[in-house]
Structures are given as C-alpha cells and as structure tokens.
Length: 272
Image (cartoon, rainbow, N blue to C red; front, side, top):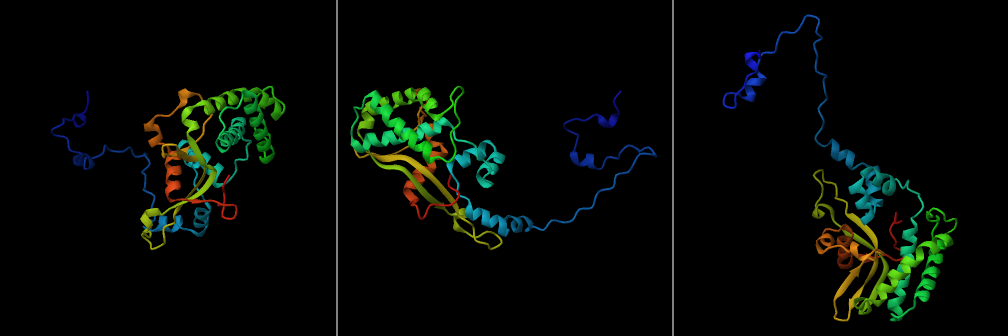
C-alpha cells in the first residue's frame, strides 16, 4: 500500500508544498551531509579570463578558414589540435594533390581559350601539373594501397580526372566563361559585436578570415560567377538551398565584396 503522501493529483499538488514537506526521520547512524561552502564568483571573472594577454595574442594570430569552421562544427577538439595548436602534420590526400593539378589544367583551358584538347593532351597537362605540385608540397601525399610512388598512384587515378576535365571543356557554359580570378588568396575582416566595445570597456577584436578562391570571372552574358571546383560526378551537384547554407560559398562571396587580395608580402599568418 502506498503512503498517503505519495498520492498526488493534478489539481491539488503544488511544487512549493514539496519544499516544506517534512522528511522522514533518519536513522541515528545515518551520516548527515553538510553543504560545502563555496566562494562567490565575481561577475567579471570570465571577462578577465577571456581577455587575458595570452588569449588576446592567440586571437590576433587566428585566421578562420571555411575548413576550420567545418572542422569545429564536426569536432571542436579536432579544430583545436589542427588549427590552433597546429599539431596536424599528416600527409595530404592524393585526391587533394590531383585536384590542385586539375585546377591548373582548367585555368589553362580558359587562358588559351581552347576547348578541344584531346584525351592524351589533357593527361599530359595533368601529369605536368601533378609533378609540379608534388615538388611544391613539403610532405608526400598518402598513396593508395599497391602504389609505391606518386607516379604509380597517378597512373591509377589520373584517367578518371582526365575524363572529368574533358567533360568540363566540352560543356557549353564553361566555354562561355572568362576566368579573371584563379587560386586567389584573400583576407576578410569582420568587426565583432558590430564594432562596439565589450562590457568591461576593452575593444572587441575583429574576426579575420582567409581562404583561396578557386575560380572567378564572368560569362558572355555579363553574369559574375565565383566557382569552387570539385572533381566529382554529377550526382554530387549541390542544390540552390545547400549553396545558400554553405559556409565556404558564403565566406568567398563576402570576400569578393568586402575582402582584400593577399599578396606575398601581406600574406596572413597561420595560412596552411
């Protein structure tokens, strides 16, 4: 049988009454808990800690990238190790090296205004750009299983990339495109807190963004376009809604409007 004080109804029960309900008697040997005294926390303690000289110096040296933001959204600790502490020294993926070489081939399409290269010509241009990127990278890319050298991996993967490049040059919309931006690094500064000082009077630090725009230019009809080249099949084509919510597309378009080009002498720190 349930004790009478455990029966409740929606109409009669009041949570305030529960606070004043008499507790059941304790056994004599039951230890009595005494609350641990706590010191009051000053209201500005977090502000002082967040604006310490060490963290201020870190904020002044951090440049956000779209990959930094995406890493943070998926795993904040990974973003800390990779972008703040710079502990990630892993080798680049082979697809990244091949993708960079493919960008160079695409740029040659537009600079020469030639869109009738043969398969072998595209393959030769891709191999030349691939070898140049291998020499430029400080760390060799991760090679697929069964490949001992970058040349072996290129022979294995390059036919698929060459076919994608052929499809690119045959597309009528690409033939109408005039490339004026190619692998352009930028610096974008966005004021934090609308430029207003923090509650303790300290100036708010701006958010600094950097990145590299793959391609930009205009079509024959005058339409401006910012492109991010991806070597993927057509089924991976993003929708309009996905592009509107894409972090990379948002940052790059904002950089074209409000950013500044990064030259060799003004190249930001911590750019990878």
